[in-house]
Image 1 (tube, helix red, strand yellow):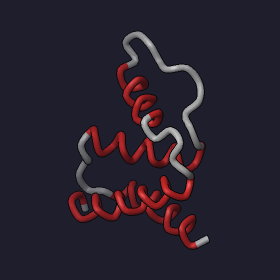
Image 2: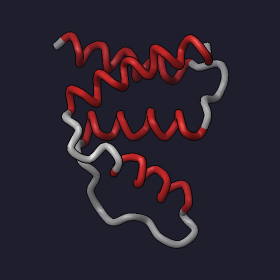
Image 3: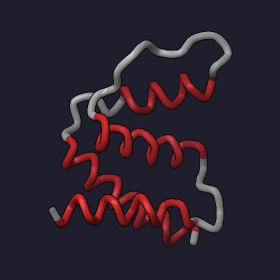
Image 4: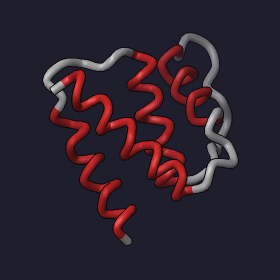
Length: 87
């Protein structure tokens, strides 16, 4: 239960960065959050000029098979690391 609480707190804190993380860091935050909350990626990969959607889909698909607990732990650690840089 403590991991889930840590995850929720990290999700809340991730909105408080005073500087914007890099696109790669944002994709990592997004993909770990989605893997932790929704599991493996579903649906079809976006096509055409939806470059943002494609990047998000691919980042999440890269977490395929990662357990919810491991994704939560990695998310908490990533947010803690980024807080030092962007807060």
